[in-house]
Length: 552
Ligand code: 16G
Ligand code: MG
Image (cartoon, rainbow, N blue to C red; front, side):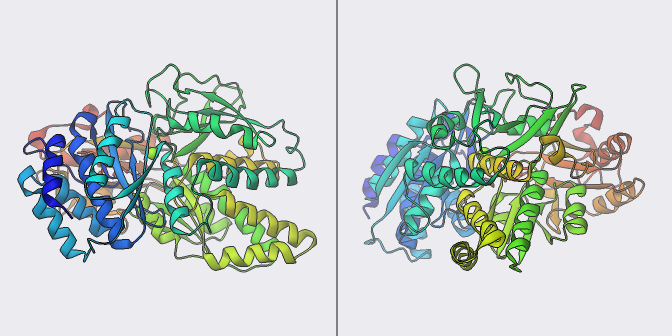
């Protein structure tokens, strides 16, 4: 490893003095102007990780649902998963090193992680449609090549497609072919097979409206559409030909504003969905005859999927261990429905895909979704092999159910939540069950809920436990929340420091609108009125909640 060459090359990607960025929940993310050195250095780090794991590593250039002027980068580990936590720390250290310290920090990582410098390295790179992404991905490649790494640049990809490519490359073809063609064929074949089983929808008349957030999802759906057209037509909106990325549209906008995206022509009863900017989140919605908007978020998606998978297992006669993984943001109604009606065990983890993903891996079948629409289902290798064998051996109804489950296993992207794959899964389930979007929505009624973000001097004074549902510090905060919450029926509230922004997030839900308004406002107001005010938010920062009207 020629560290002198690294230093020389790094001068072309010089770090602005004093700029410190942290590898957060979803990698580095900030205004694209500040990211050139980060990209170069993540190219370097990917090479070290690849040498250490003796596997292909992915680098994705995207800032997901952030505004168009932002960008970001995250590394993808060998099984298509998020980067291991100890390497997140290396990433932060490497990104923060001043120019002259770069070789030293690299050498320290090599030593600490026992990286064999002679080992070969292979990196795959993908990027979203942002104007800054192409140049930034070239900087990643510059970092890769200066350390002697080999690479393949996939160019424009959705984030989950890059995760899929990494997984395929490291599973010697067992998971699928590491090409766009391979991805489209694997998913579409499974989907079309399933749609043939649907009595009412296998005739090619099914359609769904898709808001693509003016992002990569539009390009990729156009590329893939003809593979699955037999089973589904997609009507694309916000396809990037006019509007700005994520501007007043996309899954994050729809979920947080609880209203339809701009630019979507919605008629009562139309089944609509929104992707986010890098197509790893999806939410559904519709308008009723009275023009009222109804959101179907990640919780209801998880409920639909897990209930259906459970039904299939019952039909096949297989008693497998199925679990659903959620976060604190999951609507209380969804958790209650899953546990009490569906009798499916539910687990709660900290926010952030990596936490849910790891928990879901503990089950034969693990379904995970964040309320914001990121999620998928994971099947253990043993289960996959068993179901695929049963699909061949069993006959009649059992055989049909086993073949359907085998197709669903292929249809889910098991490396990451994937808006395209999830959309096809949902459309197949609705078609197979003959459910309308209204009937799906009616499975249970969401508790009214609200989120706020609150700007504070130092969000790190808040620490949490119990999967972020309880505040540990500052003292008194949790007690104050408990006192408020117990006044309302089925009420729940929590605060947590954001992992992606310099804010504190407040969430509250209760049985009625009045209850939640009161409880969210009061929980948010702990800063100015509660006993804990001075240590938490500090009254001198003065933000009565009435002024904290930035609803997420
Ligand atoms: C990131 C996470 C998402 C999480 C969100 C929380 C990934 C790929 N994405 O977008 O899962 O819900 O952060 O943001 O992990 P927050 O910490 O700012 O609330
Ligand atoms: Mg995203």
